[in-house]
Amino acid sequence: MDDLNIFKPGLHFNAIALQAVKSKFASNFAGYKHNQYIVIEHPIVDGLPMRLEEGTVWIIYFIHNGFIYEFTAQVIGVTKSPFPLAFLSYPDSIDRTDLRLERRYPVEIEAEFYLDLEKIGPENWLKGTIQDISLKGCQLKTKISLLPGTIIHLALSLRDQGELKNMTATAKNCQKAGDIFVVGLSFFDFTTQDYEKWSDYITRLSAVSLRV
Image 1 (cartoon, one colour):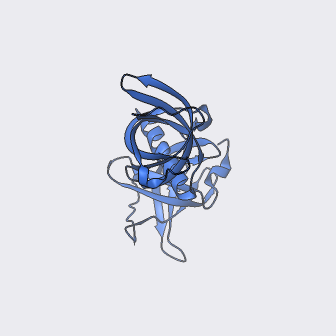
Image 2 (image 1 turned 90 degrees about the vertical axis):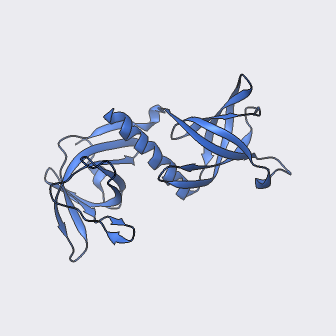
Image 3 (image 1 turned 180 degrees about the vertical axis):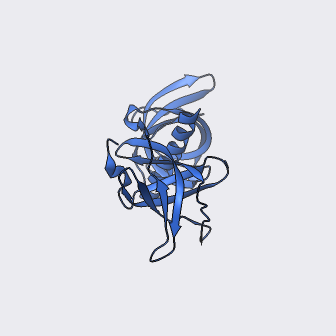
């Protein structure tokens, strides 16, 4: 492995079952022994410890230092005492994708926004549709033109992530396409919670793309 610090304790990750598509969980790394095993905090789902059967294989993916990492690992043991932990097999290889390449993913997400102008506030939400996204920006289709440099406050809902209520972005460009406008947006302010949701959503899209 090029970067053993990716397994440092406390680093958050997501997991999808290789055999059962609907099975998934999120947890944190708790440690590792090089080339032998990885230790994770036992995942909690709906307030209860998730049942992890030995031998099940999971796709693990997460963001670290500007990269998306993905690998498969098998559950090799669990323990309840002194702390609830699970042990995964050490991966033979890890896929790594550089987020700084700014790859964009096609989506169709309904969104609302308001302009950062005096006398205009959240009571005057406008509507639009996000048609592609990256970690640092998106393209928004809307019925109004936005001049480059216009600041907007964006709200939307992501599948499995919930609502993101106040993402602040700057319009970088705006092109007319028929009776609508396509606006390139660059984010410059997130709440910590919104950023975690957005980056996790990007990670999921990348993981799906890597498997196709």
